[in-house]
Picture 1 (cartoon, helix red, strand yellow):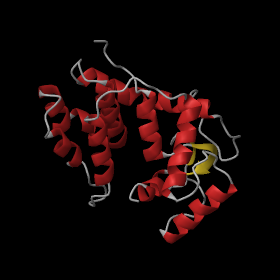
Picture 2 (cartoon, rainbow, N blue to C red; picture 1 turned 120 degrees about the horizontal axis):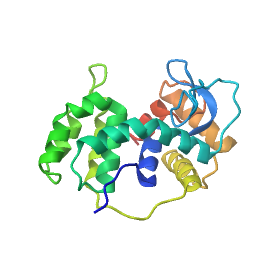
Picture 3 (cartoon, rainbow, N blue to C red; picture 1 turned 60 degrees about the vertical axis):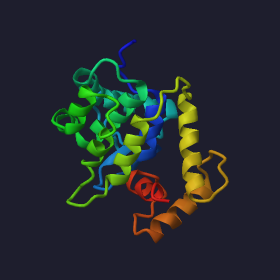
Picture 4 (cartoon, helix red, strand yellow; picture 1 turned 30 degrees about the horizontal axis):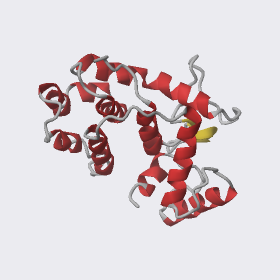
Length: 216
């Protein structure tokens, strides 16, 4: 069995549904210029500026894969050699969210290495549900655990299809026709949704908006 060292496109799709994919620069929740899938820097270390031009889906995913490398390394170098791709992807999502040091010290990692099929791994994911003293990450932990225990599938979507799938996901959550095009109607509906949920009404389906959409 070949050792897994990087996230599959299915794993990237999973993370897009958690983090969002925005092709033009925008300000994140703390006012930092961001682009693609939560990236605040380009490959050469240059900071993203709000005046930068939009990027392609392929560039956004390339930037994100570059950002993911340290988290993938933390998973690869600390886990047993026989985990499947869904398990690797779910653990990478977890590590990206809680940090490499958190993953290395977690009971989750210990349980995976002792028995990768241990049902209590689900509870080990959910133990990391709190942020700011509130269980706001519980839904994400449940989704990561579900991915972990999903049998591996070798089919992989193309980079462009990942973006189309994400737009369709947003549209389906909002009750819109899922044509995969983030046009004026989709943006207006996102803004209306954000307004109703006390979010910044910028029409950008970023992490906070997706967290609310994922509750539907």
